[in-house]
Image (cartoon, rainbow, N blue to C red; front, side, top):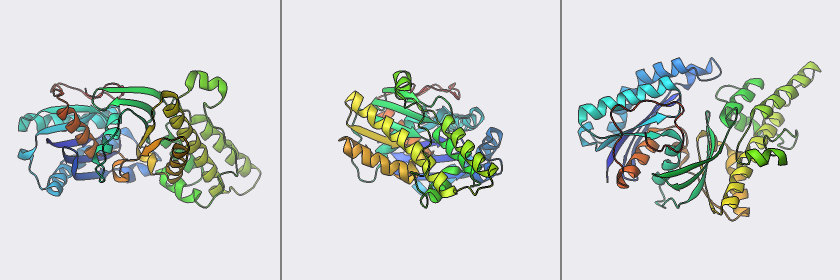
Amino acid sequence: MSLVLGIETSCDETGIGIVRGSTLLANVISSSMEEHARYGGVVPEVAARAHLEAIEPAIRAALAEAGVTLADLDAIAVTSGPGLAGALMVGVGAAKALALALDRPLYAVNHLVGHVGADVLRDDGTALELPTVALLVSGGHTSLLLVRDLTSDVELLGETIDDAAGEAFDKVARLLGLPYPGGPHIDRVAAEGDPAAIRFPRGLTLPKDLERHRYDFSFSGLKTAVARHVERLRDAGQEVPVADVAASFREAVADVLTAKAVAACQDLGVPRLLLGGGVVANARVRALAEERAAAAGVSLRIPPLALCTDNGAMIAALCAQLIAAGHAPSALDVSADSTLPVTHIQA
């Protein structure tokens, strides 16, 4: 089994992971989230600079955690896209340097498929059954995939046509006076609110929308509806019921995400659904997915929550699967691609 070091720098977290086959040995994450908090969102230039400062210490920490040396590694893996261009360049540059210096093969892989690959690192040892529908929800991506083969056949069923779910959480949190990042804070406040207090819109769920966008998502209208609701209350001099607004907003997001994901499973005759991405940490998204999957006879898999946010372990795990399947390494002149399609599992 190959010993792989994976590098993930697609957004605001410098992730270094080390795996042997499907066994997790190290998962080190250095986040620049606090640096972005003052701006209310990720600033690409700040993220790239933070990666430059964090990547070498993170690599050293991962090697120490795994109890291995650079010389022990069999391959180097890195996220080449999609993501923020400047941030990706830092990781790709570091991976190329390691591969060249160590004379090891380089595997440049897709960030989104990496989220699916994280599932092979489960502690319970159960194998990922394929095909599966995968719902990936993070700060920058909301995608619905059909994964027939993890290393060779991934189809994009649908994606967000405007804001990703994570972006909507951040923007609504700002409207409600909650800190960045919005997801955890909305989840916390929503626990005290009534999810049925306000009926916010569910984007792209009307019959006319489902004809063209059955598996696509839209959260811009939802965000605007929350903003208008809050604005009306404040203009009338009324107190904003933050918990109820947060709970109702969270319910609208969870409703759309889980309904479309389970519908894809039923439409395609695939009785398996996998969740990935940082928004999966949201309690309501998980609970509603479990409820709807069970009602539809669909088995639900969620990777360990520590591996749902961006991390290098998932990149290393996907690389190990590519090696096991006999895929050749990427060329050393591979470049970062901020818009890498999910169908391109390896660059």
